Each structure stands twice: as C-alpha cells, then as structure tokens.
Length: 330
Image 1 (cartoon, rainbow, N blue to C red):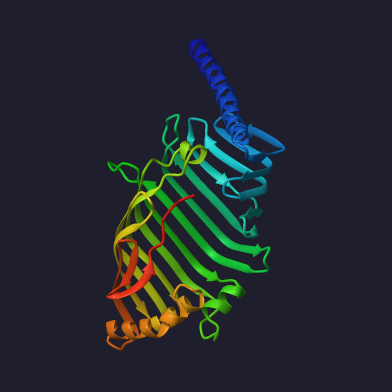
Image 2 (image 1 turned 90 degrees about the horizontal axis):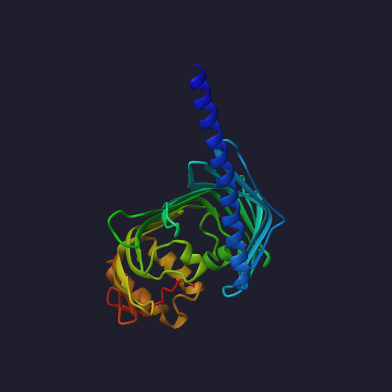
C-alpha cells in the first residue's frame, strides 16, 4: 500500500512538473511570436498574457490585444481572446472570441458583435504547426462599418481540413444562413427593392491546392498561392433568385485561372441587373450580353452555361466577358 502511495505521489509530482514546463513553454512561444511580429514592423500589443487550467488544461487569455500588419493595412483588436487546449494535446486549440471586437482594412473599420463565436484549430504536432483542420461557428453576428453600413448574419460556419495523401491540398467549406446585406448593397444589387432583405443562404464547398502548406510560415513569411481549385458547389438563394456553380480551374504563377466552371441561374436577368449595377458588366455590353444569354437559355428564366477561363479572358458560353481576375492572396 505504501509503495502504491509513493508511486502516485511521484506520478503527481512528474505531472505537476510537466504542466509547469508546458505552461512556461506555451506562454513563451506566444510571447516570442508577438515579439517577432513587432520585429517585422507589426503592431502587436497586449496588456496581459496568462495561462491557467492546472492540472489538465492550458487556458490562455490575452487581454487588450491589438494586431496590425503594415503591408496589408489589416488590423484586429479585442478586449481579450482565449486559447483553450488539453495539456497533453497543446496543438489542438479552441479559440473563444469576445462579444465585441474590431476589424480594420485600408478602406473601412468594422465593429463586430455576435451572440457567440468559437473556433477550433487542430495543428500538426511539429515545429511548423501545419494546419490539420479548423472550424469556426458564429451566431447573431452584426458588423457596423465606419462608412455607415450595417451587415447581419444569423448563423455562419467555416471549415477547412488537410486532404490526406495530397500535398498542400485542403478542403474548404462555408455556409451562411440568413444574411442581411447592408443598405448600400441592397440599393446597388436590388434598386427596385423586389427581393427580400434577407438572403436565405450562401454555400461553398471546394478543394484547393497551394504552392506551400498553410503553417506558421504562411503568416510569418509569405502567403501560399492557389494553384488549383476544384469547386464542388458554390450556391446562393435569395428570394426567387438562385445560383449554382461547379467546375475546376488551374492557376498559373501570375494568378490567372484556366479551366471551366458550369453555372446554373434561375431568374438570370435579375442577376444580370446586379452585375450591371455593381460594374461587373459594363453598361455598353448589357444589351449584347442579355441577347446572347437569352439565346443560351432558350428564352427561359433558367440559364445553364459554361464559364470558361482561358488566355487571361473569361467567356460565358460563346460570349466574351473581358479580362479574367488574378487570383492572388496578399
């Protein structure tokens, strides 16, 4: 009996030492990462960084955190952010965001609130911390812009996971249920106000291959660039307007896509209206494009046509749409 007690005490002592070592290493790693960002010219400020959770968890809280990348002009700040993990699986992290935080770009600042927002991040157990899988779920989200616009989302989901046996390849899915666009977006996309204020859903499911893995170097050094996109589903439903696309493209070193995506659109003339008012379709091409799409659809309100990317140009069926966008991740 005494031997058992001694063994238990030794095991408990070893575990206490392991937790203390892990806590110190965990905090030191986060502080070193923030210091490295400052060394690269970032703003990386916080008032306190602490880790608790003995004996089985590492629960880290960073208060008054503010990050800003001078190259992209993107910044994020919040009263706190928490990273929760099991002591024996520190590379599997759950992140908890506060109910209010701020996201800024060179064009506008968004004050974001939500009822709940949680993210899980499973990293590979290596020094590079490559992405294995990630999940983000948010409910009751509102974003108020410094430009005076307001956007709301009832529920949003985002997921990404590495594809086994394929190098630098990830499957990415996203879904938004109940999107309320900004007033400015509604005035632009639906000037006649014939569509409801609520977009029923937006959905995306794709497999993407990149030039490099998404790991710590993707943040610290350079973002991996897209080389192939297999689009299983890109769809939206907004009142009577529905849209769906699927296909495959490759992307060259300059970011130009090459391939074909098949689209299906119901009430396609309304979608064409939206494309014209947003400037995607020049006013001078509206009549020609509408006539051509009318032929492709056989005169119906349902359009099935291939969207072809080739030689730096876009074609919808036999109709040229202009220059293809460059798909470059900054």
